[in-house]
Length: 296
Image (cartoon, rainbow, N blue to C red; front, side):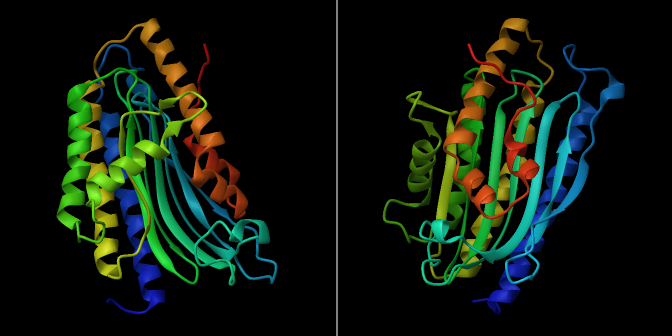
């Protein structure tokens, strides 16, 4: 097992920041290439704008960490956010019972990356990916990625699932009897479900949490490759579809689908609740919300 816990925390934080930079560069390259008839003109080409934030100081006066929010609005991405944060402190008495290892000792450290893409074209799926490391009296990795197309596209769905399955299969340690991909795919399908609508948010992907197989290096490597897989497959799906023309009717369908996305993130998403209940930056937490949405 590699190094001390402090070294592991630093490695994880450094990785999330590096992945952020790679994803931002890749998405800006997509902005450079677009040429479809339904996009904005070249002068509206987007680039990421970054802003830093600090978490309020802890009750004992110590620093609480913070993060960097990177947001781009352009001709490909109506809004895409790539956020990295590293925060630390103590859970509130109300919240600590909901987090493993925090019942008796409420101190925590958490670092992670979160990406949500709301493309301008209705033919490009909404996409989400996040990975994180959390430390209480225990430590573990969590995260995942999922795709929310406006219209069914079998090739996009197959390629996205295939990329994530390949990562799961490469890293499957046998820790779970059903295997990494079956377990994490089912977990995703169950998690990204809107019970009040009795429908899934999208076509799924993978979701995992409390990943601690006893081999930190292996768990970290898996988490890194989830990020790399997303970085590889999502721009390919985007480039495949971005230059297709769309109609106002298709745009309307996109805005309604975004409304479902808003409902999930505000009502059910655990990451939203975690951020708000640990003193995170509100704008960074709500970065996942689209600039425009609609309800029928």
